[in-house]
Amino acid sequence: MNLRDLPAGELPRERLIARGAEALSDTELLAILLRTGRAGENVLELARGIAARFRETGLHEILAMPCAEFARIPGIGTAKAATVLAALELGRRAQQTAKRRPRIREGADVAELLRPRFRAEKREHFLVLPLSAKNEVLMVADVSVGTLTNALVHPREVFEPPIRCGAAHIILAHNHPSGDPAPSAEDHRLTRVLKDAGALLGIPVTDHVIIGGDGFFSFAEEGVL
Image 1 (cartoon, one colour):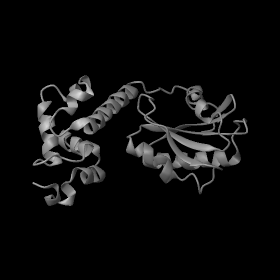
Image 2 (cartoon, rainbow, N blue to C red):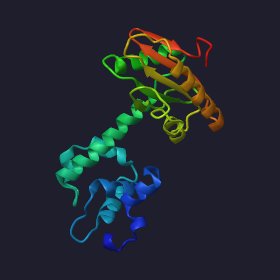
Image 3 (cartoon, rainbow, N blue to C red):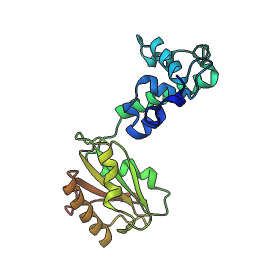
Image 4 (cartoon, rainbow, N blue to C red):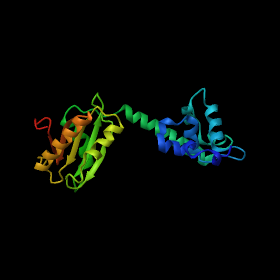
C-alpha cells in the first residue's frame, strides 16, 4: 500500500501531532524517523521489518551496533542509521536525566537550582517549577520575560505546564536583576492571584522564590504565602 492511500488521520506524523508520541507504536515512531521507504516497500513496511528484527532483544539493541552495521540493513543507509541512532541515544540520555531530577526541600534549593540561570539576566524572568508528590522538579518552564504584570503573567500560562506534566504542586520563581530579592507590592499581589488559581485547579502553589544577587526571598519561609 502506498502511504498516499492512507487516510490523513492514520499517517504516523499526523497521529503523533494529534494524539502525542506515546500513542504511536514502535513501527510508527520508526517510520517518522526513517521518513522514506525503498523500492517496493513504503516507509511503514520498512519500519515494521526493522521492529520485527529487534522484537526479541528490544530496539535499544540498535545502540550497541556500529552505525555502519545498522546502515547495511536493506533500506536504511548511513543517513537513516544516523538519525535513528541519534534519536535512541537522545531518549537514553533523557531517561537518565529523569532519574536525576533535583528535589526541592526549601527555598535555598530553588535558589541554588536557578541562580546560574539568572546571574547574567538584565530583565525579570518568571518561571514555574512543577513538582511531583516527592518534591522532584518535573520541569522548569518559562512563563514571561519583563516586568511582572497581569498582562504578562497569566494563570493560564502558569498552570498549563504543571497540568501537562501531572504536577502535584508548583513553586513560582523569578529574579530581581537589581540584586535585591525583597518582594514588591506587585509580587505580593501576583502571588495571591496565582495561589487562588492553584487552589481552584487543585495544584497548590507551595512557594514563590525571588532570587536577587546572592540572596533570595521565600514567601513560604517568610510566612506570607
